Image (tube, rainbow, N blue to C red; front, top):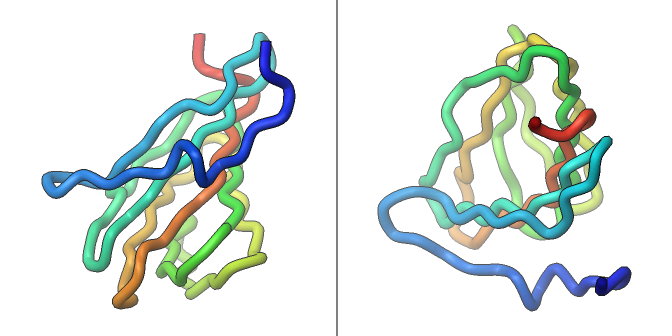
Length: 107
């Protein structure tokens, strides 16, 4: 098992919708990478019984968490507690790359 990963080796894009891949899946947490090209959106959704964290690796996104909407740039940590609707849109002209963790991980 590879315990040290470089997220850049897993980055990608998809024209029809944002790109996502799982970097690591354990019993208690799932860690993934989401890449959104300009104007791509991850629509509002929620996870019952699981918190979600977005760490902005590069770019800029408009995040909605419940009733709050804010812009976050590289270095920001965005927290979506379990059961709270959340989503993100890349409003910039460059790729938005997000390290995503969901805990506990999906069953």
